[in-house]
Length: 501
Image (cartoon, rainbow, N blue to C red; front, side, top):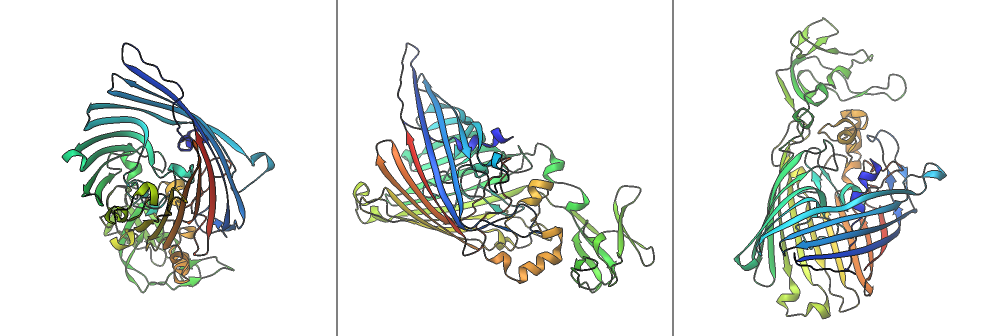
């Protein structure tokens, strides 16, 4: 599994150093490249559970990884393009557990794809490859494919978090049909990708992205993704277990709020009696003031969920029972304004001068209990390229606002394959307590600074400082459930030396 998860880390390509041609019009080239990353988490913390435990501080934690890739490319009769890349990654696990685990290595495939050009305007690509639709986004953004809707989770960097910077493509197995119209002013991409990086694995998501250029300065785009609409196993994409059933139970008795950390270790919100609304597996945990459970969750002869009251033995049946699902419809819109073009600035002299934005709706349909407000699933990104007049190749600044009231934690999805946010202890009372303290509102705003500078031909320096959705890997290659930069004061920096030939 560790080797497989290194697929996204081998992304470096360079110029060819060998070419051949023959009577079949075959062109070949081989490129080799590598990178060295070094940086530091200035302030941050690590969460590798559902949020019940205390976060492990990672202040001043050193960051390091090295990668290398060898890529073979070929073109047959000017129509069929093939790319095969292999490589490896050395990475420093976080947290360090033993001296043996301080440095890990994993081989992987960087790309295995083929593309056929039906015409200069129409081509089909398939295999394992990367795709991005927003060339301006250097860190934040690319929400359509680098996100989950239920639970509402955003990722930055490469797939699985294996590439920390200078990589914002979504990379997976799939196919892409690209069609350029109006002399290249309109581009349409018809996509279908398999979900490699988050459970449930291998579901297919048909998607569509369009990009239009208006004049010399304005570019707009939009698209949608039918996220996980072709499930490999429907019962996993839409689990029907009690843990994933939203229920409404009439005539449920009242119970008090309890916050006991010493004797009974019971935490619950108060209920005044009547129709109880919640997740099916939680109802059996509610207790009276003495800690005695109010009801026992059972199933009847038909396998349907029932609740038997402790006080009198009455049986209560849910009048509503709805299974939550990972399936979603995600939509995205973006725009980019080239201010340098409007001002007749020469980009090769001044550098890029742009303003750009992206907004997405991560699930246009509401689901009960967790996802009943669409505004809580709308991230907004604003960015700017700042001209440096030859000092740098690129200076890109980005900001993000995302008012998600739930923890940015993939524990429930990764561990239990449930389309739910991770509550500490799977307990609404503990979640509500943390929410009231403002814990989950401290990550609403994200920022990123990205710098590129060519030092010599074939050697580039990249610098990134950010408070984003940065996740790290442990010695088994498992990404942290939550980003290490969750507080407003958290941030990290990273330097990359990248070369190719």
